[in-house]
Image (tube, rainbow, N blue to C red; front, top):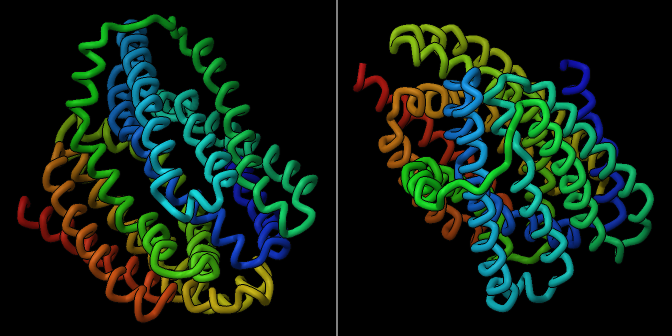
Length: 398
């Protein structure tokens, strides 16, 4: 699993430098704005099942009948949600100028959303077979990188980047779906619609929490695209994506692999779950703080190697966001790992909602005056508020 995870992070270091140097900051901004906008549809289709369905499967992974029931209900729910997403996307093409002007990029980007219907990562997480997810992710990146090396030859080829991403994910997603059905003895059948609608209703708090979290992460890119030119989006997303790779490398494997175990500990007792969380805190802190210091020091070198001299303004973004992985590591530990497992969904939602409002206000104030640098400060300040609010909420609860 370790070697596969490392390989997963190597491939972006091959594809992104090629893409960014050929298409430049402006077109890099175009494809990243489209990708950010499509995240709304991805959120709708996934509906927080990566958390709620993972939790449900982890608690009943030895019960074949219950596993089938959960799988079929989640699958039908996603099919219903993708239908709604298609309608909303078509409307967006006519309402949002940035999408209307780059309609081909928008359509190719939207295809990625469809892949999440058939990509059952939540099932693999619940069954605690994360190596499968790592292998499928690796296959996606291999396909994408090969396609990019073949088709991206000049600036006008930027439109093929989102198609390469979407196609790779759809191909691998279909294979992972078939593999999961066979491995876990899933019998596909149409479940009654009422329990599916009840499922969507019952999971609405987690879904809206995911939407709100998106409001102070991806929405930063969307608002920047609305208020500034594509070059500004390109500079911000260059620094943001490099930080995101570091964040994924440091925190996401930890979070994905530990979430089912933390959930299992909390299912035994509240005290046992909290003990596990306390044991993880120093590990998360050491790794993320070390990454932050190294990132800040080597920011100019990293941007130059990864994107080239045209993206020099992204150094400022990279340095501002260097400490975000550490802060997010703590908010993940306090929020998702602790509050969600303690069934504190509503306080979790309230905190993220307030954070989202703060983020939107900060963006409108800072982006108009400082452009992409204002976007970076908005994200950092919002994450700090979210983490502190979670800490004091848990402290009050004892």
